[in-house]
Amino acid sequence: MATPFIAGVAVAATALAGRYGIQAWQAFKARPPRPRIKKFYDGGFQPTMTKREAALILGIRENVPAEKVKEAHRKVMVANHPDAGGSHFLASKINEAKDVMLGKTKNSGSAF
Image 1: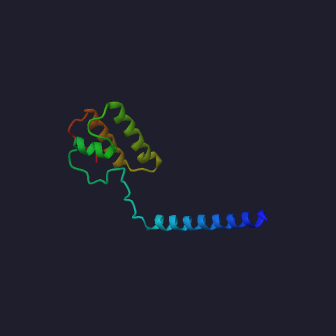
Image 2: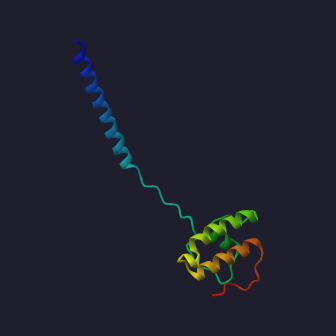
């Protein structure tokens, strides 16, 4: 006697769970897309690099300690090193950005 009752409750619970799952999936598909966040500076270099441009290239703020500058330089340089298929021009700009952020610039600009 109890077996048909338990089977009916199980079928009803499965139907409700399926209905909830379908509603959740439709709500998930209907949500607006989130914009992608850009992590790196797009480019368009200025003739003389400013501290703002250097911070954008390295992906850091303008007033960070030297350790953070060196860490950010290392991360960006690993991704763009000429020995790993990167550009010599970008590598020189990344190095120039590090020098500007650390205050070691000579006001001469890039080698390119």
